[in-house]
Image (tube, rainbow, N blue to C red; front, side, top):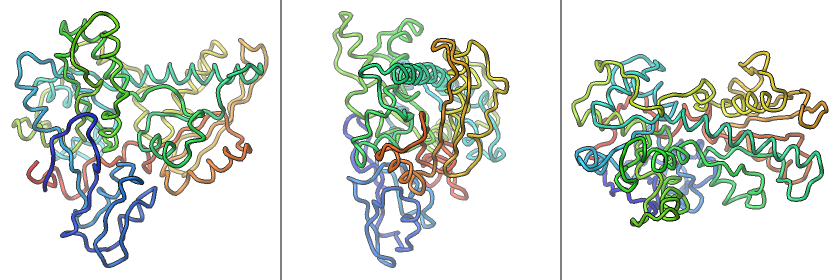
Length: 410
């Protein structure tokens, strides 16, 4: 397998089909949400980069291992871990901790947070749990929704478009940008937890780590190949912009320097002779390892919506939801919907909020978006995740029966 070293801002063609391995079975086409795969049945296929979301669903579902990633940060991360002048911050997504154990012989779906912390600490990472940033996302996204809701009820100018879409799935964001740009005003302005974590690590985190921000190297560990594309977007260098405004003078740097998939993190630990299965548990090394249950459920479909509704309910009514587990948005139905009625103390009136949750985007999103375009959507808030089941089934997760050895000579 031929790979190139990952450089922020240069990612193109993240997912490729190896024509010499492709059998033309068409399995990949069944899982592509944008019909980006070219080629007739029985002939070798290729990917249209302009349509591709880099979600990796074709990759993890190819029965012949003919689809590969072309960018890896493994060598760069290992070099940074060995550099005594660099603080390497590992940002761990919630879905990673229930999948990476499979690469070390542990049970499918076994929660290995403490062991993963320990293994990454042994490798030289500072621990930054992405759940911490997910909690920040909930506060931002939930507050934005409340502002839009109130402004629309009051008939204010520039109230913000409803329904509001979630913005934490990079495949979904790219889908909207390329296919429905007229609906971009409906997208939440909040960054994803990955990007919030990178910004925090290089601003407030610079004080916590007692390092200059340009000497902090942020590595997110994600269940999603599309997170590499997200991290490379040139606008995501706000930590550098912040320090420039406060008198720093350093070359431009991204908020997230490198992204490793769950598979790649397993490979990195094996390259460093660290056996996660036998690693003692570790509790973290800073407040960035602290988080709530709201951040944890980001990894599954409906989790973002459930967490947002908990927050909105608390802010609008001053009380917690009677039952924190909001079951109507759970489960694997392609489109889930629910209504929440409450007394809004700020508006001094009863309000009913209609929400929807969409996953397995390629099979389910179009009717929802057509209603929004037509102005007939009944919803005020819509969560969208590209992958079936949410991030737990992302394109960067372990591939059943293949283990991390599929990475070849990375």
